Image 1 (cartoon, rainbow, N blue to C red):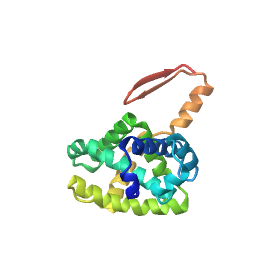
Image 2 (image 1 turned 90 degrees about the vertical axis):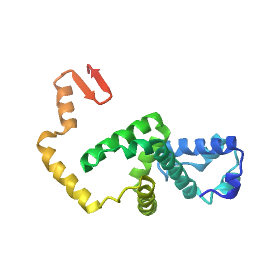
Image 3 (image 1 turned 30 degrees about the vertical axis):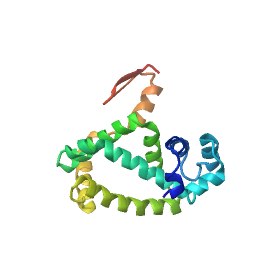
Length: 196
Protein backbone atom coordinates (compact mmCIF):
# COMPACT_ATOMS: atom_id res chain seq x y z
CA UNK A 1 0.00 0.00 0.00
CA UNK A 2 1.16 3.56 -0.55
CA UNK A 3 3.26 5.35 2.01
CA UNK A 4 1.98 8.32 3.99
CA UNK A 5 4.14 10.49 1.72
CA UNK A 6 2.05 9.44 -1.29
CA UNK A 7 -1.26 10.11 0.47
CA UNK A 8 -0.04 13.58 1.40
CA UNK A 9 0.82 14.55 -2.18
CA UNK A 10 -1.33 17.16 -3.91
CA UNK A 11 -4.38 15.51 -5.53
CA UNK A 12 -3.23 16.44 -9.05
CA UNK A 13 0.16 14.74 -8.61
CA UNK A 14 -1.36 11.61 -7.03
CA UNK A 15 -3.88 11.39 -9.88
CA UNK A 16 -1.11 11.79 -12.47
CA UNK A 17 0.92 8.94 -10.93
CA UNK A 18 -2.15 6.70 -10.59
CA UNK A 19 -3.17 7.38 -14.20
CA UNK A 20 0.31 6.61 -15.57
CA UNK A 21 0.55 3.41 -13.51
CA UNK A 22 -2.98 2.34 -14.44
CA UNK A 23 -2.28 2.83 -18.15
CA UNK A 24 0.98 0.87 -17.94
CA UNK A 25 -0.51 -2.07 -16.02
CA UNK A 26 -3.57 -2.02 -18.29
CA UNK A 27 -1.34 -2.27 -21.36
CA UNK A 28 0.95 -4.95 -19.88
CA UNK A 29 0.81 -7.81 -17.46
CA UNK A 30 2.69 -7.44 -14.20
CA UNK A 31 6.05 -8.82 -15.35
CA UNK A 32 6.07 -6.72 -18.54
CA UNK A 33 4.91 -3.46 -17.00
CA UNK A 34 7.71 -0.91 -16.72
CA UNK A 35 8.22 1.39 -13.76
CA UNK A 36 10.45 3.44 -16.09
CA UNK A 37 7.42 4.11 -18.30
CA UNK A 38 5.32 4.98 -15.25
CA UNK A 39 7.80 7.54 -13.94
CA UNK A 40 8.33 9.02 -17.40
CA UNK A 41 4.58 9.39 -18.02
CA UNK A 42 3.90 10.79 -14.56
CA UNK A 43 6.87 13.16 -14.72
CA UNK A 44 8.47 12.01 -11.47
CA UNK A 45 11.81 10.38 -10.65
CA UNK A 46 12.12 6.66 -10.09
CA UNK A 47 13.40 7.38 -6.60
CA UNK A 48 10.21 9.30 -5.86
CA UNK A 49 8.04 6.41 -7.05
CA UNK A 50 9.74 4.11 -4.58
CA UNK A 51 9.30 6.62 -1.79
CA UNK A 52 5.56 6.37 -2.48
CA UNK A 53 5.39 2.58 -2.92
CA UNK A 54 7.63 -0.12 -1.48
CA UNK A 55 8.07 -1.79 -4.87
CA UNK A 56 6.35 -2.48 -8.19
CA UNK A 57 4.16 -5.19 -6.62
CA UNK A 58 2.98 -2.77 -3.94
CA UNK A 59 1.94 -0.27 -6.63
CA UNK A 60 0.22 -3.02 -8.64
CA UNK A 61 -1.92 -4.22 -5.73
CA UNK A 62 -2.73 -0.63 -4.79
CA UNK A 63 -4.11 -0.10 -8.31
CA UNK A 64 -6.10 -3.34 -8.11
CA UNK A 65 -7.57 -2.30 -4.76
CA UNK A 66 -8.37 1.17 -6.06
CA UNK A 67 -10.04 -0.14 -9.23
CA UNK A 68 -12.03 -2.76 -7.33
CA UNK A 69 -13.16 -0.24 -4.71
CA UNK A 70 -14.20 2.24 -7.40
CA UNK A 71 -16.23 -0.40 -9.20
CA UNK A 72 -17.80 -1.66 -5.96
CA UNK A 73 -18.76 1.87 -4.98
CA UNK A 74 -20.25 2.73 -8.37
CA UNK A 75 -22.17 -0.54 -8.74
CA UNK A 76 -23.24 -1.19 -5.12
CA UNK A 77 -26.86 -0.09 -5.62
CA UNK A 78 -27.28 -2.28 -8.71
CA UNK A 79 -25.61 -5.27 -7.03
CA UNK A 80 -28.24 -5.18 -4.28
CA UNK A 81 -30.91 -5.59 -6.98
CA UNK A 82 -29.37 -8.71 -8.58
CA UNK A 83 -31.60 -11.79 -8.80
CA UNK A 84 -31.27 -14.47 -6.11
CA UNK A 85 -31.01 -17.41 -8.53
CA UNK A 86 -27.28 -18.24 -8.74
CA UNK A 87 -27.13 -18.59 -12.52
CA UNK A 88 -29.21 -15.44 -13.14
CA UNK A 89 -27.16 -13.58 -10.53
CA UNK A 90 -23.87 -14.53 -12.20
CA UNK A 91 -25.23 -13.53 -15.60
CA UNK A 92 -26.59 -10.19 -14.32
CA UNK A 93 -23.39 -9.42 -12.41
CA UNK A 94 -21.30 -10.24 -15.48
CA UNK A 95 -23.38 -7.81 -17.53
CA UNK A 96 -22.99 -5.17 -14.83
CA UNK A 97 -19.23 -5.71 -14.65
CA UNK A 98 -18.81 -5.64 -18.44
CA UNK A 99 -20.86 -2.43 -18.66
CA UNK A 100 -18.70 -0.86 -15.98
CA UNK A 101 -15.48 -1.84 -17.76
CA UNK A 102 -16.75 -0.55 -21.09
CA UNK A 103 -17.27 2.81 -19.40
CA UNK A 104 -13.84 2.52 -17.68
CA UNK A 105 -11.61 0.70 -20.22
CA UNK A 106 -8.28 1.12 -18.40
CA UNK A 107 -9.71 -0.42 -15.23
CA UNK A 108 -11.23 -3.18 -17.35
CA UNK A 109 -7.90 -4.00 -18.98
CA UNK A 110 -6.13 -3.87 -15.61
CA UNK A 111 -8.59 -6.30 -14.05
CA UNK A 112 -8.49 -8.58 -17.10
CA UNK A 113 -4.70 -8.71 -16.87
CA UNK A 114 -4.98 -9.30 -13.12
CA UNK A 115 -7.32 -12.26 -13.66
CA UNK A 116 -5.07 -13.69 -16.37
CA UNK A 117 -1.77 -13.56 -14.46
CA UNK A 118 0.05 -16.88 -14.70
CA UNK A 119 3.43 -15.99 -13.20
CA UNK A 120 3.59 -18.40 -10.24
CA UNK A 121 4.77 -15.93 -7.62
CA UNK A 122 2.35 -13.13 -8.49
CA UNK A 123 -0.48 -15.62 -9.16
CA UNK A 124 -0.12 -17.04 -5.64
CA UNK A 125 -0.27 -13.55 -4.15
CA UNK A 126 -3.32 -12.79 -6.29
CA UNK A 127 -5.06 -15.91 -4.96
CA UNK A 128 -4.39 -14.76 -1.38
CA UNK A 129 -5.66 -11.27 -2.17
CA UNK A 130 -8.83 -12.66 -3.79
CA UNK A 131 -9.73 -14.64 -0.66
CA UNK A 132 -9.40 -11.46 1.41
CA UNK A 133 -11.41 -9.47 -1.16
CA UNK A 134 -14.22 -12.04 -1.07
CA UNK A 135 -14.55 -11.44 2.66
CA UNK A 136 -14.60 -7.66 2.14
CA UNK A 137 -17.22 -7.92 -0.62
CA UNK A 138 -19.46 -10.14 1.50
CA UNK A 139 -19.33 -7.49 4.21
CA UNK A 140 -19.82 -4.63 1.74
CA UNK A 141 -22.86 -6.16 0.05
CA UNK A 142 -24.27 -7.67 3.26
CA UNK A 143 -24.77 -11.06 1.69
CA UNK A 144 -23.86 -14.58 2.65
CA UNK A 145 -20.64 -15.90 1.17
CA UNK A 146 -21.12 -18.18 -1.80
CA UNK A 147 -20.33 -21.83 -1.17
CA UNK A 148 -17.77 -22.41 -3.92
CA UNK A 149 -18.43 -26.17 -4.10
CA UNK A 150 -22.16 -25.56 -4.46
CA UNK A 151 -21.53 -22.88 -7.08
CA UNK A 152 -19.27 -25.20 -9.06
CA UNK A 153 -21.87 -27.97 -8.87
CA UNK A 154 -24.58 -25.60 -10.15
CA UNK A 155 -22.39 -24.27 -12.96
CA UNK A 156 -21.50 -27.80 -14.06
CA UNK A 157 -25.21 -28.67 -14.14
CA UNK A 158 -25.93 -25.63 -16.30
CA UNK A 159 -22.96 -26.49 -18.52
CA UNK A 160 -24.35 -29.96 -19.10
CA UNK A 161 -27.79 -28.52 -19.86
CA UNK A 162 -26.56 -26.10 -22.53
CA UNK A 163 -23.75 -28.24 -23.98
CA UNK A 164 -25.90 -29.66 -26.81
CA UNK A 165 -26.70 -26.10 -27.96
CA UNK A 166 -23.16 -24.72 -27.93
CA UNK A 167 -20.77 -25.09 -30.83
CA UNK A 168 -17.20 -24.12 -31.56
CA UNK A 169 -17.66 -20.63 -33.00
CA UNK A 170 -14.10 -20.51 -34.32
CA UNK A 171 -14.73 -23.62 -36.43
CA UNK A 172 -17.98 -22.18 -37.83
CA UNK A 173 -16.32 -18.87 -38.68
CA UNK A 174 -13.31 -20.51 -40.27
CA UNK A 175 -15.55 -22.73 -42.40
CA UNK A 176 -17.72 -19.75 -43.44
CA UNK A 177 -14.67 -17.70 -44.44
CA UNK A 178 -13.25 -20.58 -46.50
CA UNK A 179 -16.61 -20.95 -48.25
CA UNK A 180 -16.75 -17.20 -48.96
CA UNK A 181 -19.92 -16.69 -46.94
CA UNK A 182 -21.03 -13.41 -45.41
CA UNK A 183 -20.64 -13.40 -41.64
CA UNK A 184 -23.21 -11.70 -39.45
CA UNK A 185 -22.23 -11.28 -35.82
CA UNK A 186 -25.01 -10.53 -33.41
CA UNK A 187 -24.64 -9.72 -29.75
CA UNK A 188 -26.00 -7.88 -26.78
CA UNK A 189 -24.64 -4.54 -27.93
CA UNK A 190 -25.92 -4.79 -31.49
CA UNK A 191 -25.20 -6.36 -34.83
CA UNK A 192 -22.14 -6.08 -37.00
CA UNK A 193 -22.01 -7.27 -40.59
CA UNK A 194 -18.61 -8.31 -41.85
CA UNK A 195 -18.74 -9.05 -45.58
CA UNK A 196 -15.37 -10.85 -45.58
